[in-house]
Each structure stands twice: as C-alpha cells, then as structure tokens.
Length: 398
Image (tube, rainbow, N blue to C red):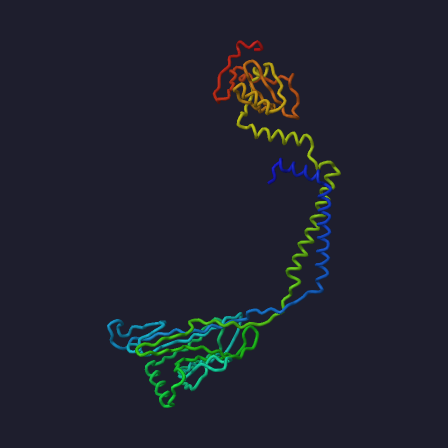
C-alpha cells in the first residue's frame, strides 16, 4: 500500500510533468493500437512450420544370470549369480537370460514375434570405410521364440533362453579348425529379433528391431555385455502454427497496454481539469505535520492537560521543531493533548504551545473542567522521564 507521503509526492510529480506524461501515454496508446491492428491482420495469414515430435517409444533389455553347478570354495552349489559383467565358466557354465520388450504410446494394439538366435561368427575390420566390420562366416541356432497376438502399451513381452558357454566356445573353435581359418576374431552373440505389426497411436506399424547379447569367453571365465533397458524413439513430423502463439500473445499485450494508456489519459485529464491532481496546501501541511510528528516521536507524550495548567500564560511557538527545542532547553517532555490536538511544554508558570495548521484558535476558549480533574495535582514530566507534583495552591490564577 502506498503511504500518504508517497502518494502526495506522486501527485506532485504528475502535476509538474503533466505534459511529458501525456505525451508518453499517447505514444503507448498508439503502440497499443498498432498491436491490436497487427493481431487482426495476422489472423488470416498464419504461418506453419514442420516440427519433429516423439510419437511413441520401445524399450528392450536383457536380464541374465548363471547358477553355480560345481563345488568350489567360494559359492555354494545352487547359488544364482545375476547381472554380472563376468561369470566363472567352470562352476557356472550355463548362462540364463530373459529378454523383455515393451512399448509406450497413448494407444495401440500390435502382434509381437520375438526370436532369439545364438550366432557364432568370425569377423574382422573392413577395408571399406562405409562398413565397420566384415563377416567371414556365421552359424545360427534358434534358442527361443515367443509370439503375442495382441500387446497393449505398457504390457511386457518376455522371452527366456539359455546358453552353455563352454560348449558354445568349443563349437566355435571346432568350426574355425574345420575351415582352416586363421583370420578374423570369433564372436558369440545372442541376437534377438523383434517383429511388431499392428496399429500404434492411430498409425500402422510394421517393423523389425534387433538387440544383441554379447558373450566373450576366456579360459576360465566369460564376460557378458547386453543392454539392460535400451529405449528407441519413433518420431513423426507435424505442422505447428508459429505466428499465432507468441505473436498473438504480444499483440494482446500491446492492445491491453493501449487501452490502459487511454484510460490513464482520461483519469489524469479529469483530475487536472477539476484541480485535484496536484495536492492542496492543506494536504501538504497535513503531510508535513505527520512527518514532523513521526520525526520527534521520542520527545512527545500523549495525554490530557489539566484545566488549571491551561490557565497559565501561554507562549505560541511557530513549529513543532521549535517546541521540541524548547523542551530540550527546559528538560521537559512535549505533551500532545488528546482533546484539542495541540502540543504543550509546561515550564514553571509558563506554557509553550504549538498548534498544527487547520486547528481553530481556542486561545480565549475555556474547556469544561472535570471536577475530579480539578482536584488532582498537576503532573509535569521532565526530560529524564521522572515526574514531579506541582502545588497549584500558590498559583495566582487558581
């Protein structure tokens, strides 16, 4: 909330800079009108651009483990070792794995065919820069196959299979010896082909995705590399309006700015014509009195001045600041009378008075005396905060 003092300052500034403010508001009103015209003109000339958005996604991944089958000093027989990067071929030779497939879309219904094949192959680096590797020979064996006629979004399709790693390694070496091949490196992978056909998010889908689990056997161990949850995103291109979003919002803001400027011009013009824009002299004096009252609050006490004290000779003081100076010199408090709004300093037989602007002159007006108040002694506080009782019996006016 704006204080009275700031409000008066604002009105004074608006009055002094009235012409400049009017010119600025006129400029803003013209700018707002131009924005409103632009909004109407652009309605029929909206532009579009092509944007690539995510339509749906698939996630495929492997969970793998090996069960300890041979006696050893570390793992009890029957212990399941799961999702390790390396397994021990002698004690846990058979790798068991499960491939899980799921797709995420607003809606869909597809048939899913998953086939897991063990592939033994010999590969090497290609001479052609366009290919990463060259395959010298390969042999396939189907380990598992699962078909699902209807798979909904979020529903998982799982396919399990197992590989005897030492047996597979021996088979690969035997094939290499039969072919008398010394070039290339042997690789053993489980290749999973996922064929989906149906409708996803209102569009027909017919595609095949491939995932690989790589087995790298050594003399006594074998390493496994496979994605745990590989997400693949299907994207599509849409036409998106670009002129109506940000441009329309800017035009609306400009139009509102223009309306506000015109309204402000009307308010300022009316106030200037009625003479209420600039603060009046009475308002300025009232604000100044409030400021002085706050500034000297530590020297002022509120209360009621007894009628006997009011009969003393009084000295009029021009400002509250001057009255505070008198109180400091006399080592007294400034008393703000709650009944008449004046400020007093009582010193011996005299009374110093400051009357704020706008108060009626009651110099000759005698306030009605409360009988109980007349019997009470006059209490006058000095600057130290202590109080003394003044005997009024010797006062010539009593």
